[in-house]
Amino acid sequence: MERALLDLHSSLRWIILLFLLLLLVKSWSSKPFSGGDRRIALILLISAHLTLVIGLYQWLFGRYGILVTSLPAGVQLMKDTFYRFYWVEHPFGMVVGITLITMAYGRVKRGVGQTPKKKGAAWLLLVALVIILGTIPWPFMMGGVGRPLLPGT
Image 1 (cartoon, rainbow, N blue to C red):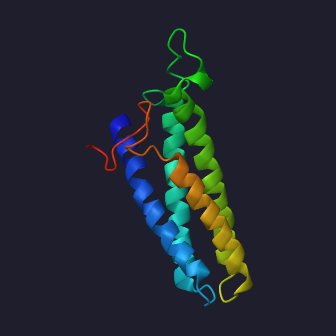
Image 2: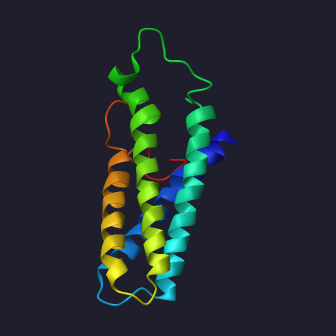
């Protein structure tokens, strides 16, 4: 079950990135938000929160979870790249990114048919995208942090 949750967590990032980019592009357009934009934002919100719940479970109880694993002898949390990334940087960055997505969803939801809410939503989504892209464990990351682009590979 743990591997399936990790694979689901890793797969949902692509849905989040796709809908985040799609909504970001729609937010920069000159047309007001439509009902379709609200649906895109809702799918993004649900995917992000589902990923957050799975991620929090992994963070607490997963293979390297903070409640089931202790740091190896002689390892200091903030000096070890692997544990610092997975116990501090990745969870913190994702919670901030998902909080910004949630705030943007509120603007999209209230801004259907209005243009002024779009700029605020666009900025929130852009900052969320930058934070999320910066805290995803990409394959090229050093220190044993990197993960494959597709789960199970």
